Image (tube, rainbow, N blue to C red; front, top):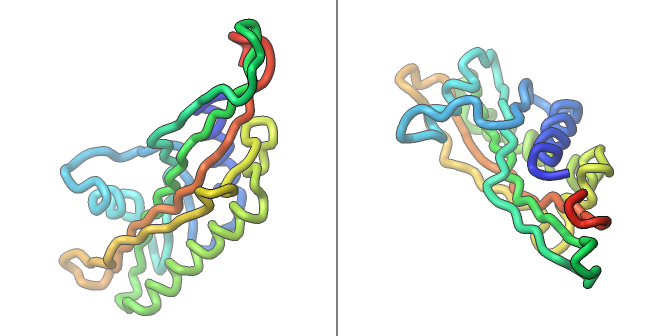
Length: 174
């Protein structure tokens, strides 16, 4: 299947998951300009937010494929493990930091529940397993910040997990 299939499966899964406050889910970074990607992207992605809202971005920073069983040169029995970082770009126009944090937390809680509740991301052909095993599901968050108006609160974060493929069959076909 490969990176493209994993990325597409993750984008479709999260777009259809009805996560609170999430509007768009992008299958790749649509904004890369500037030295401070995190801050500039959050402002760009959430420019039209009214209230609280977030844009998610599917990022796959790395992967590893390795043989899992001896098959001879004519076949493969491999795992391909993709480290997925679901970037969360959040903004709240309320001006209330505690309310913004609570809204952000509800997004993260829903994302984690979705991953753990459907460990093939709704696409068992592309994703054999996601968010399981030793890696689990992790989350990191930035410090909240505001821009000049002082009313829009931005928070960025990432929910990371592994999405596994299991490729078995004739060499060169999977």
